[in-house]
Image (cartoon, rainbow, N blue to C red):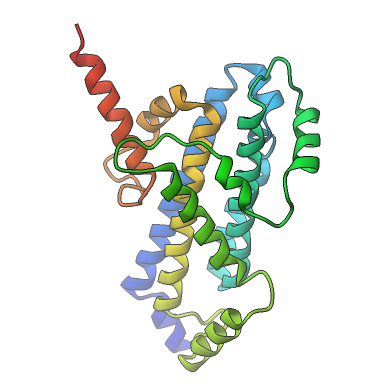
Length: 248
């Protein structure tokens, strides 16, 4: 116990906890700003599936933070997979049925039930995102599929689960006694998931609102500054803004 207390008290372990706290706060802020933007137009909040899932999303994010603190890593991965799959499907339906004045939430729910496959990430192929030059929708979709597929190894009984548990056990990193290596790997996976989820929540608010949201949530110590996708979106909107200022 004392040895593990030393691990948890080490600077490397605390750095991962602090990193996760920053990621959690930054993602919650992004979801919150997306909701506030959408709330300016009541039919969006009342009609789109992404915003119907706001509380569900935040509940999972809060659960993830608590589960990491308790050393329950595989449940964290299951929550991340659920968040990726649900956001993909909700955004897909909302983009397929974008007219918030003519299509009700119940009609979108019916579309989800009848036209969207269960336990699949395939709807990502129909999700549209704005990324700018040098970053394609295809790459984004493939990254979501790759992350979801790898996380699926922790949802169903698999060799991946068994092998990782044995590796952790060989280092003495049992549940509740995780080492820095295990926590760092997990936080990396959470960061990757939140980065892609952030893009989808920005797209839920709409391409025109996404730039304003990014301006509101970014800062000098933004948790996603070194991520793959959100900075790419940010650079795209910065470029658009610079072009706009340069026009007579």
